Length: 468
Image 1 (cartoon, helix red, strand yellow):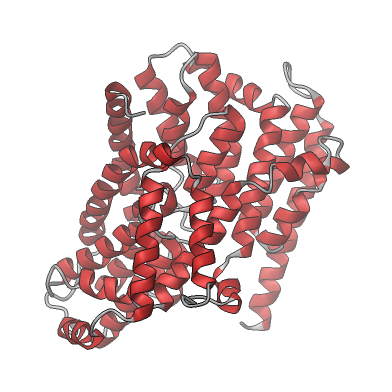
Image 2: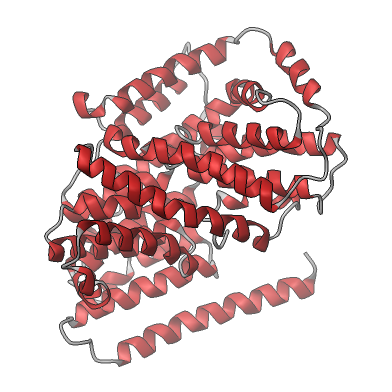
């Protein structure tokens, strides 16, 4: 990076820092609005400033997330001990263990095996190759971290593009590298394990409303929605960026690679057995009562056990996105401030209170539309959930509606991260140079428009049939 670029970037970050300080000082200069306490107003300003810090990354997200945990005590909002109680939630440990599981999936070679078999299923025509890559990525991300899924398939896709001499600027290259992270994001909706933000949403609902959602209850809506959106996304991406080639060379090489794989290795067999057990416990959580984080952590323990030894701490430490864990914990802690200080109820009554007497269909529709397009203002999913779940829960209380009916649609929209593609999942293929930010926003906007009626329809059906 040249010195002039570094200088410009540094000035931009300094500007953000100054803007955050100004927002806080100016905000605190106002009297709290009618119906809101001083502490409630402080909580709103704090989370606005926190969101600005996360979006701008004027300091690394992990550092800002930790720093923010101590501000409530300094500002007289809440004791640090109480804030930390809402930071160290099971969500943090589930995400940590899920990242380790995903790393073992890759390192054993099992991930590459699955990817090679799935990507070649639809043949060698360009649109079918795109379908193969997107469905493979989407289906893997249903049960594993979406970032890792996109990384695996992105690597395979890069090899295919290079063998076809398709450089940045290629329409097919653009469609592939845009399609893969979109598929990872929508595939991650399918189960709680598909994305850390799913677990964050479930945990926030439990913390704020005292309501638990099982793995099955989430999946009964998430799975059909994810499957439909994967195929819808493929159609949209392939139409927006029509490939300039018909036949993709190098697919025969994938067949050759599959032959060279040979039988499952001992490490692959060990992983397959352990992960099958994990999936079984995840899907039967409502019957066994075994929490998702415990199951995931137990799998990680097995990976380190003598005789299994699929993981060591050095690789596990590299696999764990510590900044993500800090962000998730901080989001949960700050969201609880909105709930406990009355801020969430005031925001809900002020901005959404006009819908409180509406039919359930209207309420679900409003929340879904709000959940999708709030990403235009706050492109980081964890921050969206931290800000919005307490507000939507307050709306459900005012409207005298089961909180699940309104919070779940919001949670399912958390993965709609491609309107402004700044989420880490979107950026997994950005570094290859095949697409620019605006290239994902166009098909992403169309996918979002399909997402809204699909989610509303599935939610209302699930409520009617008693699945939710």
